[in-house]
Amino acid sequence: LAGMATLTGCTLSANSADYGFGIENHRKMTLNNSIVANSSAGRDVFNDEFADTS
Image (cartoon, rainbow, N blue to C red; front, side, top):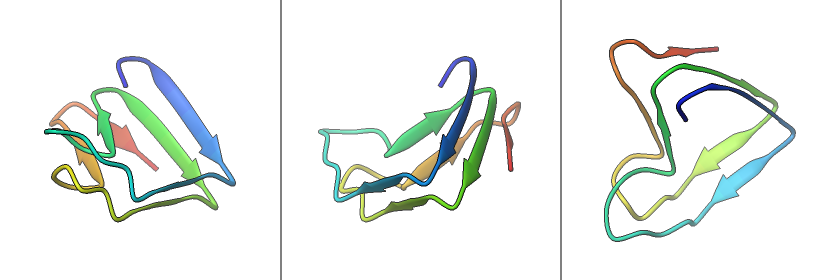
């Protein structure tokens, strides 16, 4: 994510890719009652040093 994003009531599960993450966040991301799990490419969520997640 390069902008702002809010996920509410979402499930991101069992996603796959050759490399990367389920979500790669570089800015502001808010997860409300959401699940991010079981990504086959690295971690489920990656936040760089400037990211803000709540």
